Length: 323
Ligand code: SAM
Ligand code: DTB
Ligand code: SF4
Image (cartoon, rainbow, N blue to C red; front, side, top):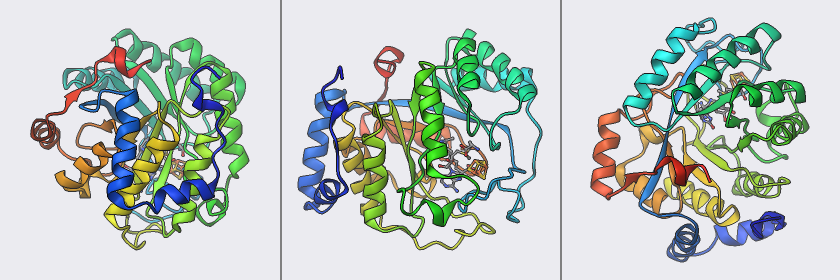
């Protein structure tokens, strides 16, 4: 493989050895890997838009959008094209370089896909990078999205293969891997990560990162989500994860996938500036920007501007973020 590390085979034992390093050693090593591959003072920013909200038939135990749980979320139909383009223009004005459209589907139906293709074409024409997360895709659907101008497809492994069955019953791990193959084969970039803080063990966190790093190609973008505990979901009262364990997870992700964009995704609303600074030190170099993720809160844009100023971070230019 072109970048050398892509053919590396990681094991859970090796990842666990990294996890248990003294924190200062782990941070130092992860920060070194980060610096060899990126400007450590640059962070890429993406904005999320929920183009279809709630009423999802799947049973993901973490998700406020599943129709099975009473979370008080108001379901909404597919957003009209002009509203999506308005949101994208607003995101661009605020400085985002990538616009991510998310839909609460198991997989897109034919008439939905045609509408999403139009959205992708429109957003792309505005000079933004495009990303979608629409659930499972067949190879032909992936090819259509690519032809419409889709740069990235987000589809998470979510957790380790062993723990997956505790979290989701309506799809299996192999379904996820098949969708990722379809996306890769269509020539799109893969955005694939997972969630921590779902009462899993450290071994599962390591197992998730190893599964990601050992994909036929490591994902170009790896979102690390901290569970947003939404009342009404089965994980609404999950035990809080030690914040330093989150930092360790970011550091191990950086070491296993040196060239990936590691995204500090859900959960930033609950994190202090100091904790986020440690995550950037550990190798995170991408965030979601804007006051909402899909349905839950994200820090206000103003707080993030202040955070960047406080840490001397700058926005990653588009060319550095797309290599
Ligand atoms: N329905 C599609 C799917 O599942 O692939 C796309 C949207 S789904 C909301 C995208 C991702 O959001 C999930 O894979 C999961 O990793 C993340 N997510 C959902 N609810 C979350 C929560 N409460 N906390 C953290 N991440 C969450
Ligand atoms: C990802 O890994 N995290 C984002 C994005 N991909 C689509 C979504 C986070 C969702 C958090 C819960 C919510 O706001 O509904
Ligand atoms: Fe549906 Fe996606 Fe939520 Fe699972 S994560 S319930 S598939 S919206």
